[in-house]
Amino acid sequence: MTKDVVIIPTYNEKENITAIINAVFSLPNEFHILVIDDGSPDGTASIVKDLIIKYSDRLFLIERAGKLGLGTAYITGFKWALEHEYDYIFEMDADFSHPPQDLLNLREACVDNGADMAIGSRYISGVNVVNWPMGRVLMSYFASVYVRFVTRMKIMDTTAGFVCYSSKVLSTIDLDRIHLKGYGFQIEMKFTAWKFKFNIVEVPIIFTDRRQGSSKMSGGIFNEAVWGVIGMKIKSWFRKYRRDEV
View 1 (cartoon, one colour):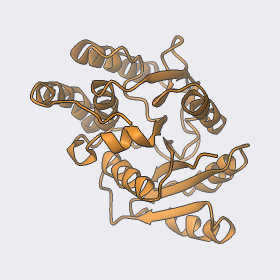
View 2: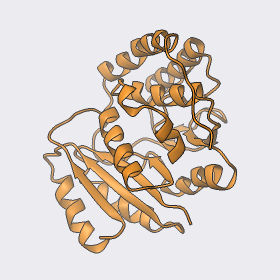
View 3: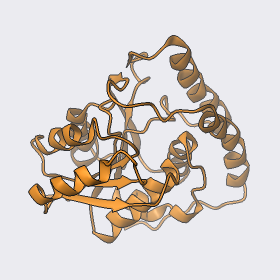
View 4: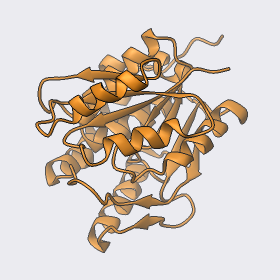
């Protein structure tokens, strides 16, 4: 039996947080959940604290003071998960854009089929995005095309935020050397795992834009991903990627 934890970063997700937690806990696998809340003024953390009374052995909360960035939230969560000896660590949004039932498919790709990292991919089997305006679909799709061109990775959905990592991937990556904070963080994690020659697979999902709450996407976040990729690639020329084999 593996220990599996789903990390969910939140900022003003009171409309979604109870439903997403209940949805994950209703799945036929004993997932744990770690919510990392960046000082949501809408009371998201208070809702999670109330739910912890019900799910004290499966639900955990880290509160941070203010919006410190998606990347730093996940790095905090990854370190916590490694300290608590989880075998598989998942990233997922709180807003149901990532279908909770697909956690089982990501887990199967790693636990049963031997992948080190499984990506819930919007683009591995066409363009599977619902309720996004065409401009945003094109921006996201061509961002991944650009990343593949610069990095030479074969990953179709390089900015995906629905991911399962084996603990050995997160233990091998020096998390303190991951510097991009927005969507660039997702690219940098995949690129680093790829450079370490981990087995990365893409699992098709249907991504549905949030129905409740507001999007956290901004032009600044997107620009960081675009320009950060070039700096990331240049830095990789001066780094050795070696991992200890067990």
